[in-house]
Length: 91
Image 1 (cartoon, rainbow, N blue to C red):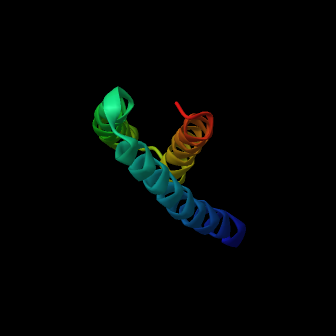
Image 2 (image 1 turned 60 degrees about the horizontal axis):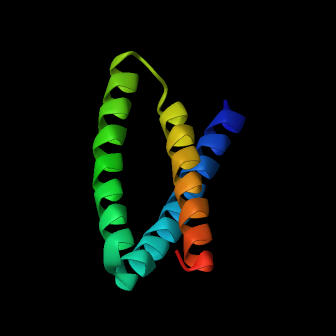
Image 3 (image 1 turned 90 degrees about the vertical axis):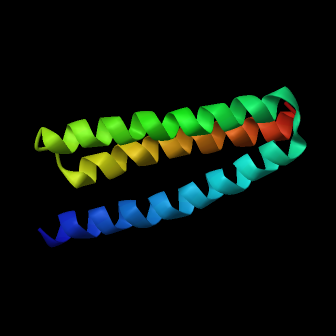
């Protein structure tokens, strides 16, 4: 039980850190302007809507909050890696 709780706490902490990294990279992307910034802004909004629906459905079906956090972390890390690669390649 304690191990599970600590794992949940770790995942929440890492989600917060990784989310801030994505915010910083997205701000940099938006600051560059152009069509890439518009695409990123649209993607950012649509991701939030999809995530809200997925979370609601998962929790309504009796799913665990820890699984939601793990899923968010996976998506946030993918965004971080994608944004970092684009920023470094100048795209």
